[in-house]
Image: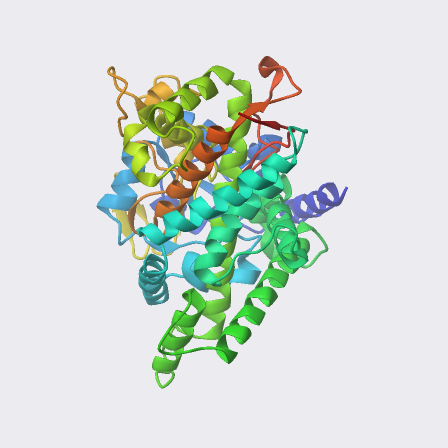
Length: 491
């Protein structure tokens, strides 16, 4: 009801403005695309299928580079592996600006490592990559943290005694604890009430951000923000997480030892102290709290959702589980935990994990980019500050690189001899200067958590494999895995 009323008001305003607004002034510079209506942009062409379906339909008509109007805002779409690489790699600096996601912009406001641009982003990115590497990324210590957390998960799954359960919470908890150990210097018990509340906020917010309402909000944020709606719930949820982060910062400040920083927060506070005399420093509390939200949210929800999809896919294709478990037995056995060094000896399992990420297609049109200057691209001129959407889904489903792009098929990542093969179209973390800074830790988590669970358990579903539906519950900014029940049966 809420959405239909707001949509009616937006449509009414759009038609009232139809007589007084002309053709968008920037259209002559931009790639072609569907003709927009004043104020409404291309909303009426989108339909109930959502943005991704609409974008892919327009690609069929206009090619790999085209313009869509989200309300009055022109956005250039980049489709296909080569086109995305040409922009984000070959012209990396020009395409390195960050656009907005309207439904969360009131919280981020261009602060923090994910949504910052320019010198702010460069400073925060350098700091975050270095600091997270020092506290675990790319080093054996993070492997040990994941292995330890994986054993906590195994203990918890054994307690279920093969009963049906929804895996969403536990998969959230394990991924959250890894990022918490690096950023906050601690892990949480799975029954910790505050931890449970944070995971609930993450889960609900990711679903709402990916909802159809949020996609409509992208067209009319300047208008709809004045009315009640989902956007206010998202704002309140994320502000509650920021409040938690601020309390953590206060506790760290009280116990800070400059000679022995414990985690990301300590290191940031020391950098703040070092630059306190610089009025232009980007190391202040606003950037800290929003960066913590960014790392905590991204480090929890994306990897946990990928794992949720992964185990659902395993329920649908039990013959794949059998092959993975056979490889686990041959390489690892049952008397030691999986280690990262095992991955190169397990090409089939590695291929399955890559195919899970490709098929899940978790962030189908990436986080928006902005061009930092007037840009010549494939025969068009993209004016400075124009938003650009790299449609990662178009690469992950590119038939020139994947023989059966719409089917789950680990052979996409295996050569004729069964060895693992890389694929240039595999870009679930995006590419270029704005590639996900947590790619390394996410890949390590996926391998170690997935193999540890299948080393210790077989999985079973109350639903016949043929009847398992892999359609996402929501598909917008992100894809939300469907809810399901699973049994973990000790092996």
